[in-house]
Image (cartoon, rainbow, N blue to C red):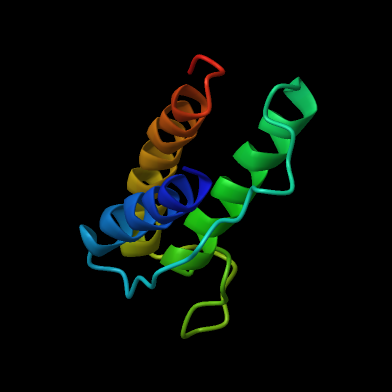
Length: 100
């Protein structure tokens, strides 16, 4: 069950990223080391999903000009990936019997 949920997390992030014009990539999110029955475990997973959304969209990377400002496509990609990561987190929690 965990393997399926891990795949689901990666697939949801890559689908969100692919829906945007930013050059997105697949990012796997591991959480089998976390105790999702605790708030701390759920918070760590939420941070990992956020980090994966940033990585998939290149959000935070210096642009062509070296500016810290994010391109519109990176911002759009990240917003979609972040939204999907919230849905993914809820699905993972439901799948593991912790609500969602």
